[in-house]
Length: 201
Image (cartoon, rainbow, N blue to C red):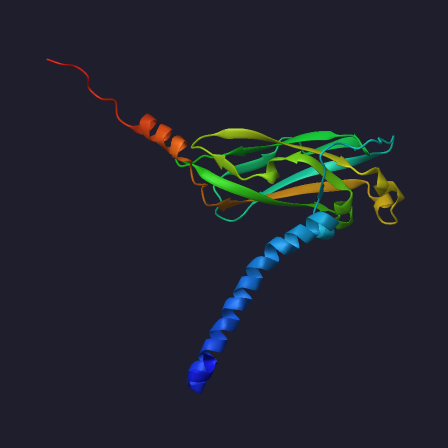
C-alpha cells in the first residue's frame, strides 16, 4: 500500500506511524514499570501478600507515615498517626484520613513507595486502601486502613540489616469517576427527583 503513495506521502505516513507507536509504548511503559517495581521492590515500591508473616522477631523497626497530593487535587489527606514501632514480622495496622470538602463527588487513586528504597523489597502490604480507587461524596470523610509487616529476611540482608526507620508515603491524584451501574444510577435518580404533589382537590 505504501508503494502506491508519493514519496512525501509515504514519509508522512511512516512518521505518523512512528509517533503513534511511541505514544502507545509510553503509555504501556507506565503499568509495566509499576508492575516491575511492585514485584521487585525497586524504587521503594512495596510488596503484597495475602497473609501475615509466620515469623516475628524481637527486633523492632520504626515506621513513619507521610501523605501528599498532586497539585490542584481538592481532597484533604493525612496520616492519622505519624509513626509507630513494630516488631519485624509483626502485622501492623495504620490509618489515613481523606476528606472531600467540595460539593461534588471526586474519585482519587494513590501512588506509594517507601524510603529508604532498599526497604521496598521487605515492606509487605496485606491490605491497603491504595489497592482500589476511592470515591468520596461531597463533604464525606473516611478513615482508610493499611495492614502491613516488615519481612524478617531484612535482618539478614546486607543493606536491610542497617535499616532502623522506614517511611511509607502516599500521593493521591484525581481520576475520572467510575461509571455507575444502571441500578445504582436509577436509585440516585429516584433520590434526586423532586417529590410529587399528591394532594387532590
